[in-house]
Image (tube, rainbow, N blue to C red; front, top):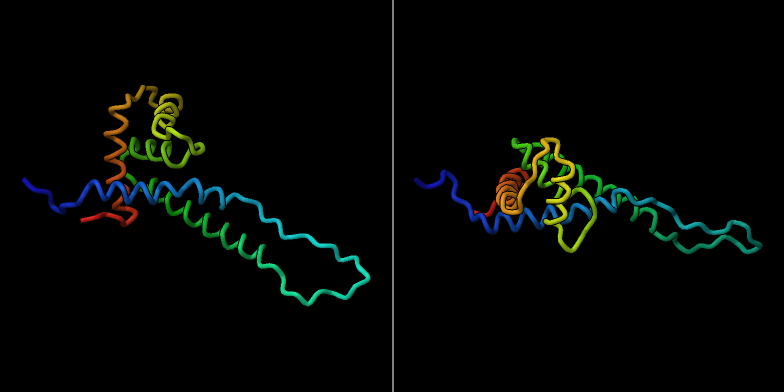
Length: 145
């Protein structure tokens, strides 16, 4: 029997991965300090009439947009009904830092921090990760038909 809503799973997973892969970068912006440029106000010269550098304003806006993005992704992951999907997506896309082998790092992280105390094999990890990507695509609105 056919699916109720047929989708292109390969493209849907790719779109979800594209959205989720930006998480760590946006988290970096959300947590960055905002240090406005400091200049000396002690001088015998008159005050400058040059426009102020928009550095601080840009940093504030970038920080706010990064925080909104990470909150959006966190809420989408928390909305997933299967806790296993949540664990895998958090371990793969949200926790830790970038690496050359993010999937293997996620497997190690899951095996070390799993509250259910079971070991996840790479084969099972990739099957569940693919299911989780399709599931979160519905919440992120990136399903490709």
